[in-house]
Image 1: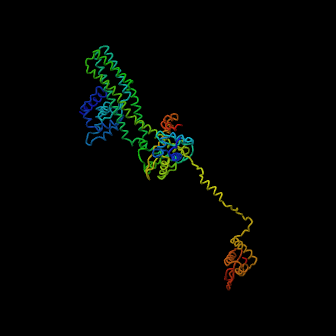
Image 2: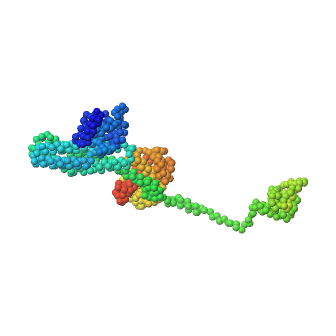
Image 3: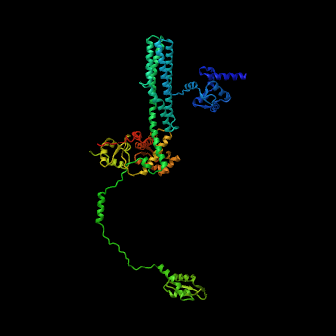
Length: 429
Length: 193
């Protein structure tokens, strides 16, 4: 039993793969599956482009309810129902099947803009149908005539639907710009809007303008339809009238839609163009500063301003004051430098010289039994402090030896007081 | 030539690098009403009075070195603000002229890259930014509204013009003039009487 089911599944898959025109997908199964997998279908539609099997299985897991069907089953159904088609036979990568994508776009209101190539395709299709119509009129072939008119009607309805979708798509894009302000940089926004302008609006305007190819093919088709009506070949006049009306409506609609699209995009384009240039200029300046430093940066990237250094002209008041200063100035004799004045030697210097001369003086008198008495006697003008300094200088001189003799203390009178000491002998070492 | 009103004040401001905008009343209205006469008067001193297409006035800069460091700081400060607005995806002119700014909440010290750039022109802390804002006010590019708050004024378009000029140069030196047409070409020195 299992083999039979698997076999049927394979057969069904082969049928689907062998020809899209012969798809044996039961609509009930398809829509029942869709009903139970709306979140998954939304994810698939949003993903767009090629998807690996692993990607799809991840989406299945993310959107699957607990306790629902097994992920494997969902994956199998996606391929069986021809919702996903492999990018090439045996490939691990899949696309959302184009008819399903269109259906989902319609259901989820995810408009796809018609490219200029698509519109040119419609023009070619109308031209081919027009040739067929002309031949049918010439040959008075009613069946051919009906087929040609049907073709024309279908093409016109497609053009109208695609134009509406393009308009909706551009409105969505514009509104996305206004709501996604903080997520995309100005430069990226500008690139996107330029893409829209260059890819869709500008080329399409050429196609749909009043003297463009769309208008010319519409005019030709209209002439042929009128000719068919006038020759009484086509008796279904309401259909004929509908076709002519549709032709006029689509023609007006096409021009209007692209004017509207341009009006929607143009202000955004202008604003972003300016912002993008501003951003580019600022970025260039900052980049130069970062790379090359401040040397010469200000000349190339900074702004300049008129700065006038103001040197004031002397006022009358200042001149008067200056003149008064000159007039009232008292003459003072120049200072005289006393270059020949006697030089006073500093007392400290003299004291130093006296102390340094003491050893030679003492050496000449050795041995000296009472050093302090000798000093005071030879230099009576010296103060007590100087006498003691001289005593210390000689006692600690290494070229002498000192000996404390003991004995009675003696009093020595200096210029500013008295010094009492026991005799200290100074002799050769 | 009848006596021009506020001539001394107008000259005194413009010669210091100030830009006269509607914030500088009554001088601005006086110059706007009789700008040809003012231009003629200043021309006798060898100075060109420029009327920017955004309707503010300034003396055409000479090639002097005056205030070079201050103007470099102003330029770096301004370019960082433009860069920040662009990265945020905000329409730049709306961002700059459409709000009041708080110095303490400026983006300048929030990114290491910006901090590094500011350091190159000796602006290190918020106090440095405050000084730049004071200088912006001195040149008439901004108006200080309080201790921490300020707004950009119309003459700030001179900094934006510089951005456009640099962008035009970057894309093509030859096309530079064309792209910057709305800037340099529009800055029309007032014609001789």
